[in-house]
Length: 118
Image 1 (tube, one colour):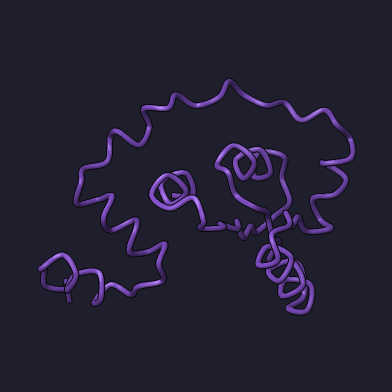
Image 2: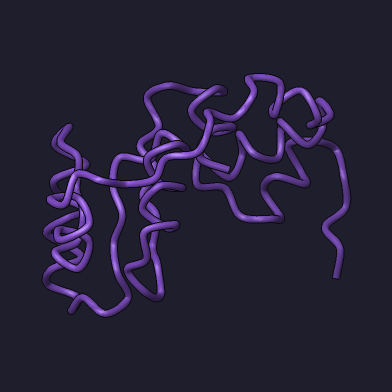
């Protein structure tokens, strides 16, 4: 999702919210062009601090991920092929763009001339 949003509009800054601070989550966040990774284990004050960092143009990774970042030995997989986004149809890409702009289902459906599924 982050890659699709960034491809549609490079000014969008995605953050990943994770249940647990695992290496695979951190790697996925980095490879998806996310600006950071928050943990559900963080309190709301810490989450807001990290969100504000991203809004100010800085990356933001939860303290829960800091040991993984500092060890410097992330086992990064091969970069994903750039054709991943090509599997999305035009309509699906429009939905992703709508989500990136903060629209809710009803607004996305209306902008695409569709009825919202009830």
